[in-house]
Image 1 (cartoon, one colour):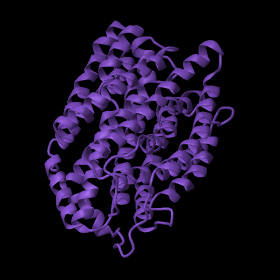
Image 2: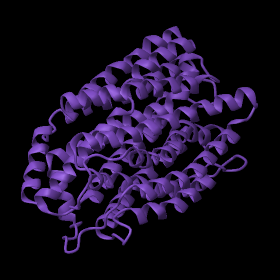
Image 3: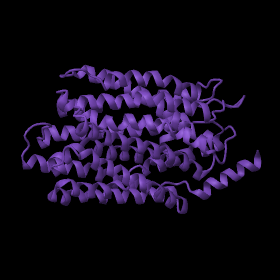
Image 4: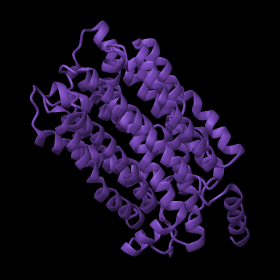
Length: 447
């Protein structure tokens, strides 16, 4: 494993973290605005839209390992990841251009499937190399959390801006949802090359050392990774967090409108949800520095699970105020799981590199990315299928009290159950700060 810094400069941290801006510009509209937009305005319906999102997310189970294999086995003179990140830019921009600008309704299922698949491939080409970069950038336990913390901060600021944008456009410019979606795509098209350029310019990416063994990416290696307690616990936790967060985003506007009677200002309530998570992130990471990362992660999951129960009595009150209070309480846990899980995976990768002598960042982060996307696919698909086939909820239609109660139960119970199981799984995470420090000391003594 190449030499890595113990303390990064502010410019390096912010340049690395800036990639969170275009990632946020794509992830939030995808579940919060695009899924309802294609289901309602573009005429595909909740069930068809949910099935397309769910099936195409499963395609990531193929593309993520392929991307991980390329990272670990195909470096260039620019390093292990920089060339792959550069290639990702035109792919992502092509998917955004068509996905966010579908033209006049109705859209065909094939149109959504084709351009959503291109968008997902571009996302994979960005997120997997970007995360796999971390173990080679810094080798300290808490510095990795610092990297991912700033990434999430910039990502969340982007989410807040995009949540506010549709409301401002609707109120002050009388711009319809189709144009709003197109403008959000424009934000991504502008920010992606700029932020990626900063990361490629200022963040180091040393090529593998001459004579270093090439990472083994065989089926046996992948199976062995799943057998490692630290790895499978992180993968399972990431999948469950993906279910919880994405299901919240994909059904929030429906819950706000039908459960609370809030329409035009619903994005503001969701913005408050993200602000609560944004403000709480430094506190949760401080807790992880004073205890252990997995301890803080478990507490976050328990808090989040209990917090979703607030939406049920709040919906009985109704209105923007009740929705906002529930959003604040449940939002306190948002964002921090991403920081801690990815930071813990960097610790696992470093330990593997020191013990076995090969770098498998691409493999492990490909598996982690695939786990999150699988969870997000279930969250994009399952709630919509439940709403359409079982609850009888119809976006843009007439829904009776039973359908609305069913909507609120789906909105609350899916993320709540996911967080409960995640808390149980991550509680047994085996790596600690002391173990990591001991391994680092032994490595320094023998180098």
